[in-house]
Amino acid sequence: MIFKSVSKLSAVRVVFILVFLITLCSCSGLWYVGFLNKIQPHKIENPKFRVPHWQKRDHPSANQIYKQAEKFEGLNSFLIIKDGILIAEWYASGFDKETPGNIKSASKSIISALVGLALQKGYFKSLNQPLFEVLPEFFPPDDHIKKTITLKHLLTMSAGFQHIENVHNYVYLSSDWTKGILQLPMMHKPGDRFNYGTIQTHLLSAALTKASGMDTLTFAQKHLLDNLHISINRWDKAPEGVFFGGSEMYLTPRDMALFGQLYLNNGRFKGNQLVPAAWVESSLNVSFEDAWAGAAYGYGWWLKKYFGYDTYYAQGYGGQRIMNIPDLNMVFVTTADYPPLFHDHRKREQKIEDLIEFALQVTSSLKTGESVSHLEQ
Image (cartoon, rainbow, N blue to C red; front, side, top):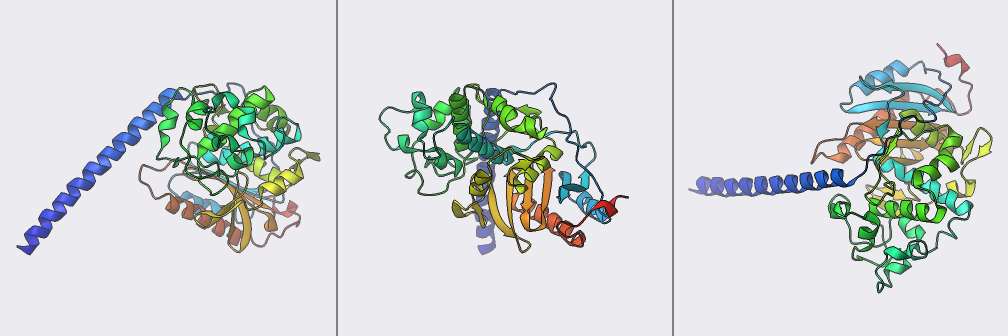
């Protein structure tokens, strides 16, 4: 009798869980379909630059790294740069150095660089400038707390909106995301706590557009990426015409590596200071400790000690990552397929970290500053 009761109870629980999952999948599916209907794909048909001309020297242990990468289901690319030299470059079948991919939230680090440039060029007054001064037409007239949100609050994910990433995504179903975001209720006072959300970097994209008088893509290419010989291959727009700040940007893995190298060089590229060194330093200071999974957060960059080294990295959904290890003068890049619904994202990230740790072990004989000319095969 007890067994039958337990079975009956278990059956009820199973049915409840199934109904819950089906409902959740349906809601997620409906949201995503709505999102796709609202977003405006913007592909650049003839990018100015194709693939940056990296100096490449395969490390003697590159084949060991490639064999390890091949075991990683869903991984599309894995690149390692040491002392400015591309020492390992692996692509899954169907991908190569000219294949752009959606780098998702890793693009937030690029948005951060653009904010630094906008400050340098006088488009923004300071990081403490209220967003209301830039976009007054989007603010509810009587919401005085919201009017205290600054550019720094947005950059450090502390604006205070009542919004949970990947849960409260209904804002993306509106016909004007900028207006919709600023209609959201407040959860806490601006600056009080960290609450990750792409809605905040999208407001930075809207602010850049308004303050500079040019769209964010044009601003990015003119003031940064053209000088790096990087072309954005595609960057989708929100319904109001603002480029999606913090997601839906397509770059090749080599271009991702070049951006990582720029920050490793404190904003310099071929003798030119493309991003102010002071901005790079400020971006890599901790704004919030233990923001997520033991990592701190700066200005669009995650900060964490890995493998005994201080690292900072740009991270996008599903395994898109640019990781810099300054003490070793190394940049690591991964791109990957997007995992299925309800996938444990932390497992994917752990696999990436395990792959990077393996690569570090087999390349440890190469010291910082050592000539790599002998590595050419």
